[in-house]
Image 1 (cartoon, rainbow, N blue to C red):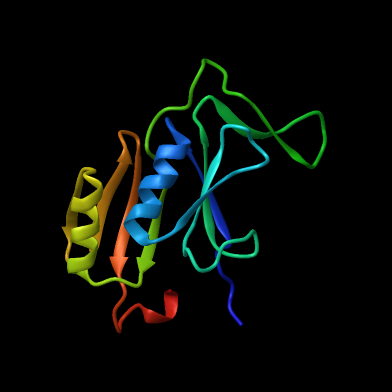
Image 2: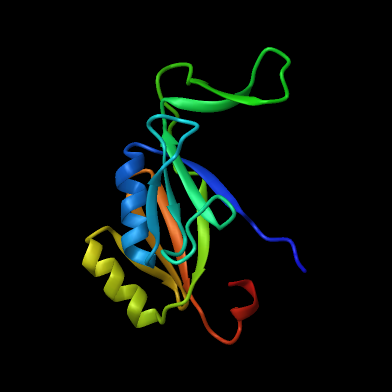
Length: 144
């Protein structure tokens, strides 16, 4: 058994659209994110939907998860100044697709994208939110 990432949380200007775009790219499944009324998740496989499976949660830039009132449970609170900025958070996903299939999926969803180098596609789900898609191959198959 090895350690694995169960989920990742990122900001989005439009959480539903960002989750839906990622789902269209990788064959995932979109669902509401119950802890936040404006949050959405993209399960990384349409065949593995549920909180025990891998997913990415998207919540609005106007909200932050923080330690409040000495409680160990984090809470969603408004971001001071209105909204978080930047594109510092991103996810690198090894997907069960070829480079040609990744390119076709990117063209199908119509989002800005480009190969940074062979085997690493940058895809902008929205102006300040990027994911990296890596085609599954013999060199990285253990990571998927």
